[in-house]
Length: 436
Image (cartoon, rainbow, N blue to C red; front, side, top):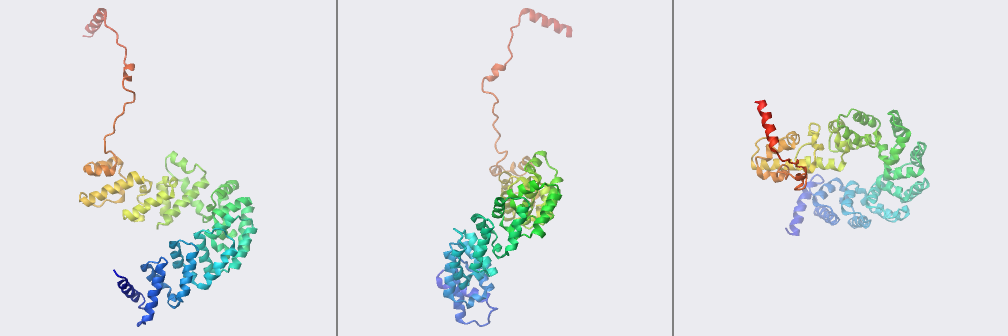
């Protein structure tokens, strides 16, 4: 399709999107929209995304195009990847303000952070625009962080992972550091805690951190054990009050094989509670309520030992490929415990093939797909259709029986044969006559 036809179609789409702006838009108004669309498309915006973006940010229709182009060029000069750049502009269009970017273009030199990552720049620009931060104020805040003993790596992670920290008061930051030191964490370990989990700086001491420590102590964990786990995994400080109690209650009521239970609590009950929390959060992020997530873990305890990436992969396959809802997981938690490569994918492939062929005239639910044993599933859906054996990859070829001993070795274990004499034969006959 030619460029002129593209512009005509785009113009029609824009007129539809902005029919509420004015009933009789002038031709210059449309030309401005087309110019904006062409400009943003050059910097990575898709046409479909730009329609919605422009409808939500109508101030762009009154913007100065040369200044807007300079703003986009400045953002691009920060070496932010195009995907992140588009996301930044969509989430925080205020960063397109020319004076704001001009001020920060020179201000980054004052912040004195070497080799800032793209994520740091995106979060930092977004936070600076939202809180109206000035480069001089941010530079002073950075010096305060350094004065508290934070390393450059920890400071970089704070600006990347939790940039609102630069908008906090000095007293709020100092109170968190003092609490961690008071609890018994050495200063060099405090640097590690903040570097690995910068969001801890945003938690209040009296309403969050201190009650959390009291809860852990009340559950029977020693102060030494709590300090050790916090240094090892600082994200423990992000757990809500009462969350540890629920996780511990679940672990104490698990009914599973002893080998599985040993793997779950092998690194301590405190660590096991945190692993339960991570998997509950993972399930809830896909739309399940917390009660159902805990129910799934209680019914399928092996999930506590599985990697989060594996659980995510199974849920994505369930929703995207199998077209099931996550709401079915509390009823069939065995799905998440099944092997992805050897069980889930082969069974789904076989069922889809049989449906397409018309061999199955009834609906097969997730329970019917997962719960049958491997042999039973093979006998029901694979054995009657030889072409499915390769898809299933199980019980396809009769296993080759291998000898347990080298060929000829059996001769060494053969009983020794003795020659029979006439006397032996005579004795045997006499014995048999007595029996008759």
